[in-house]
Length: 120
Image 1 (cartoon, rainbow, N blue to C red):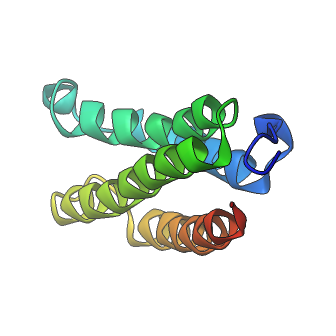
Image 2 (cartoon, rainbow, N blue to C red):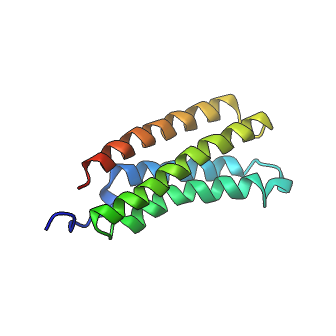
């Protein structure tokens, strides 16, 4: 029966934190320039939404398959961190907002890697 446990994603702290990060990103995108709508804004939105979405999708799978979705979610978190640095360089994100988001992303990455290590 190993690997057959299904997870309720809404109860997972990693999903809750990923959703919080996605909402934080959405809030900062409101102030981005209009010309970035189909560029950096879209990329930031997509990868931040990918984090909780992949956890939710993977939660219905076996642990081995879930681990693959966790990998995708983690990859999106690293992508998000890089895109936030680009946004900061373009002065679209304040130093304070960048710092807060980076800390949340780092926490998400630590928690998610630990969770993943606990899967079969």
